[in-house]
Amino acid sequence: MNIPNYFLSDLPPEASLTPLMLTEACDTLKRNRARYLLPRSTDELIRTLDALGRQWLVPAYPWRKLALERAPEQLHFTRQTLERGLDSFFRELTGEKLESFVVSELGHRHRLDDLVMTGNEGRERRSGIARGPELLLHITAGNVPNPTLMSMVLGILARSAQFVKCAFGSALLPSLFAHSIYEADPKLGTCIELAEWPGGKADLEDAVIAEADTVTVTGSDETINTLRKRIPSDRRCLAYGNRVSFGYITREAMSGFGVSRVVEDAAADVIAWNQLGCLSPHLFYVELGGRTTPDEFASQLATELDRREQSEPRGPVPTHVSASIASRRSFYEVRAAHSPETRLWTSANSTAWTVVQETDPTFLLSCLHRFVHVKAVDNVDHALRAAEIVRGKVSTVGIAAAEDKAHQLAVTFARWGGTRICPLGRMQKPPLTWRHDGRPALADLITWTDWEQ
Image (cartoon, rainbow, N blue to C red; front, side, top):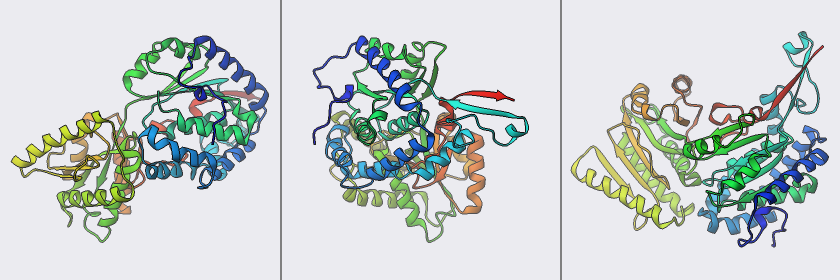
């Protein structure tokens, strides 16, 4: 299947982009938005996205097939990892969930269509209408593709023209999604542009920033801080920086017949997107006092990761990544050889997976790519003291606990600063209505107009 040349990301590698080309592309996007996107109703846009979501779940769908054929080599994920990750995203893209999402964010499904009254507004004889940016610039990270796809969905719902600047080498899946939009609705497709270029080309970024009303930036804190200085103060900048996640497992979860399920769920969170997303666990805190001890849990987790490697392999990684994992393993091999407080399990003849178990609860960052720590703790307070170093930087906490204890744990983690708490096994499967970093996703893009009658 040949990909049509609709977007800048479709240009051959030798093609050069210039600031003038990008400025002209932004002008075209704005004109197309005014003609083809702004008049659309929310219901119509939701129907289009619902149909796309259903198509992407069909194995024979050409754009899906192309993604699974080409993306493994370009993005360094295996076909199995890509299938699981894309399916978890497109299963959320249903009409019912999209409508619920708009209502939860804006209070009414037609907020973007017309002046609407809800609740107290009616008693105050006040109505409101929401509008999205004229041109929305997404500067994306290249670690996992789903956040970029979601950003594009948000832009469509907000009726914004969109310029998606992909991290260098990561444009394939966003581009294929954009092509599927273009095929389903060519006029809607003309309101999206995608491009990628190596870092350091500030003149290209500045050309698009100058045309955009709102800029979303996903990436390292350093990248965000650099870009903020170049974004005019009258433009909205929504930044999503470095975040980490971890799992918490209670002694009760380690005492019943469901231990094997907890192990399976923990392994699923580790292997999803090869642990590269901000929702992936760096470590698991396991309470002492259960019938299954933290080191026994770590051993079972290693066995499960080895089993999953057969059905959902991690795949090859760059040489420098393998070297980093090997170096970290060597450190723990020495420590384990001299102290019973450290144990190590590794994949044979590869760096495919690694489990390190320690009695020291201090939070440690993983080198990722299915390298995970298991830490023993007395209770949740013990764990939070040990994780103080990452307080304010935690995205997701996955918990395994009995229902009566799970609620109080969720409150505790929320008050400590976690922005998303979910059952273990679902850390990399956020619902469509997820508030990214604790902030509303669609409502963050919106400007309101109130009419007082």
